[in-house]
Length: 211
Image 1: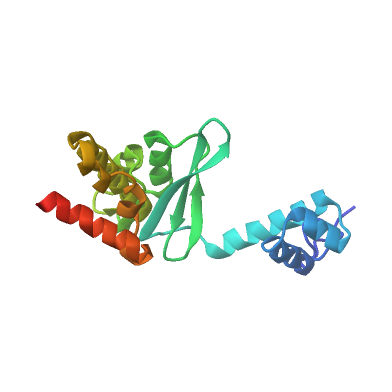
Image 2 (image 1 turned 180 degrees about the horizontal axis):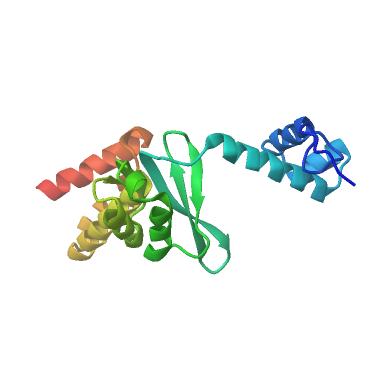
């Protein structure tokens, strides 16, 4: 018996492809459970239709050819288990997910799959200050500039500033310590976020140090 393939049907022949696309769009705004409850469908049915929608979106997007990439990691379970996520920052979509860890070898796999020609097109790689990310990027795309994200830079600057504050507190004694004690968050805050009193305290501390 010969079965005829009808193009308008979804992978699940009980539903049309148009319905599968609608379910997929709904899942982009709500959980699979909520969509299943709303449409009166089984959870697994909604999940299968969502997968068909995602495959269609990937086919529509085509093979990635990024110029500006973002490299980050996500935690997949407790105890520091991570996976690498690479995004095309110009199209604002994820283009690669690692399957092992966040090591240099794992990121090198992304560049290997991207290929030498497309690696040569990468102009900027945005990442945190994790050394394996930098090493893999320099090896595979040496022409690309590396930009560390602001969050990690500010965290290191904050740690350095706090280290200096503690050293100054240890160096001083007696009443002089009152200009530093309790000033941690004053020093780490933006000037516009400080109250007028906190700004005055910071000025007094600075003037005291310059005497």
